[in-house]
Image (cartoon, rainbow, N blue to C red):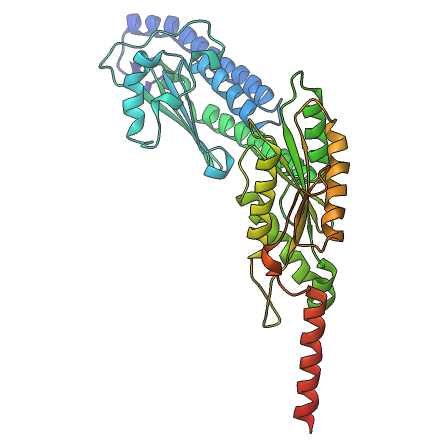
Length: 391
């Protein structure tokens, strides 16, 4: 006694009529099974090709969502990635009303999922919303799990027959590989535009952004701040280059934290930084106030090297343009000139280019004692103490 489960026909004690029926049905059954396998293999080949055609992680996910919809005709698809590689992304071919049923079901597994954040039918390349299933029907859930990711599809029951183990494994492997390649590409790309020590944009990115500003039909007002750490060489000479690197890293983060998101902070070179201000309605006075606030924040930062408390000061040169009077590239040169003026006037201050008397002075010279002199004095005192202790 045995059973052919694929066709649902038992045989053992069967008569001639049963045998004839089995002989007629078996080829059709095998043909249907072969057709499904071939369709699955064709889809898998297409899926692997399409998701690996881009090195942009967003485009990879979008391609996967479109392909999976064409094959499974889901009502809702939820892509779950680690927070640092995309987090939660969802797609639905339905309008908001039609998506509600699948959304409430998905919330049980993904409580952080928001209905307004679900990518709609246009993202899937559909001209009009798809048709929702009969209300009250429990959707079939198809899960595709891979390395650091999971895709959950809320579909009709017919999708379960397509979701073979081999197909799910192939989809997961292809998408995992595509996302890994995209992340690696993003990492390499990020290294090419970021300064390795501070994590800020490098000078090349700043210049490219300036070129973009110059090409705008109606350029907006902008200001450039060039910030230079006063007497930075004394830090390296006294405490070593690791101490200098720490100063650069900490001050770079402080600049980033004290700027608006739309402003660009870059390491300009050596101990110099640049801040590009493009705020709506920006004025020269506002740029000067921002620079002065930055000077105070950076000057208040404490460092401890070799058991000694150290503070550094910065000089800032500011160049301002209404947006159509000065080429952005020229702005960098003017900010450099203003920085030179701040240095020549005694450091630890802010100067605006083109305004001889527009300078923000430190408060009654309350800045730290000149760093090289202070370090020299500290060294003399230490040497004197060593001599006394040796008597």
